[in-house]
Length: 235
Image (cartoon, rainbow, N blue to C red; front, side, top):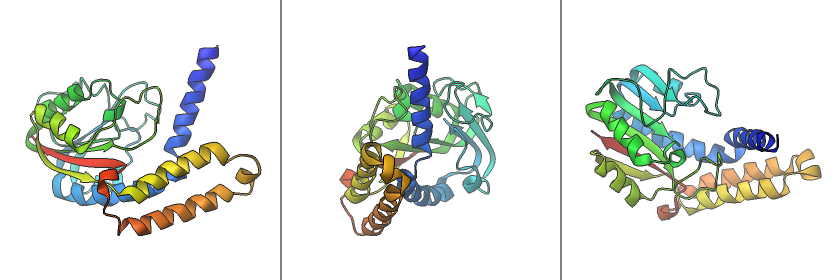
């Protein structure tokens, strides 16, 4: 019973974290980049590896003819948008089945990321593009299934080893946004309780911090401190 309660507690923590307002700033920056890259590279039949709730389906619907979501049966997310229940290592479709692929915030949760990248290569058509979104400086999340962080050099190595041509590895932000994101998670975990939570003090603090960080990010060129990378590769 102790293990079961611990498992449920971790699941609740992960669900709350995924819905946390602390990452809206990071999500906004990602969507700006993702929209730009999606318009350039996403088309035809799309596979969404580790799709979760398919949060980008509306964004991509005018670019693709079919959006096929793949995720495993033990996902912590709502399963209603999953089209194929499978792992990223073994997707039950024929070779060269898709024109495009996306895989967002998934590789860090896989024990064998290279194997998953090779599977994506297998199911993409020649000339097809894939967009990956991976963390570089980020706290532990969705524990205990959190295994890796990826630098731009590690990403280049992994994708080229699997046979892909690396088109672009784009840092998502600079130091200010990364620091603010880590800071807000720390402050929320340590201090957002009791009277502070009841009065909504953290919500106000959170809002002000994110607005300031987004503003100063326009002038922040310290992208070696990015929290995440967006990688575009071509088969």
